[in-house]
Image (cartoon, rainbow, N blue to C red; front, side, top):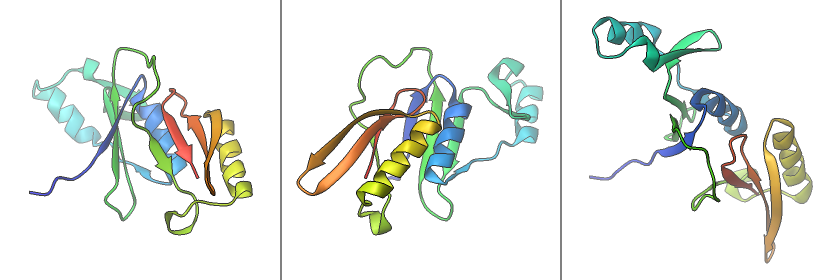
Length: 147
């Protein structure tokens, strides 16, 4: 059996971070099924404490998800009690140019500046031969690179 891959980010606010990454990746936040949530509460499988309102919609408190439109990509954002304290051992790489080949310096810098304006933190730039990238952190400190 061939497994599928799903990326999961631990975070303090799954819904805010999912919305940020949805805009960044041009993906979709998976819609909440409010009727299903209410039915789970009514049937005793969940409580009101398991939910919250996010931008006017009833959602599960501990989880949010994104999906790549028309593609296989999926990311989950999972509530955890502890804050992020050290550098990630694994991170996301976003290739901005055509066919995943990266982009030129002006495009890379413009993307960096746009992400910083939306709440990312610029950490540093690196080069390996002709390949150049910027490393940033999302609003909760998860590192990622853009090229």
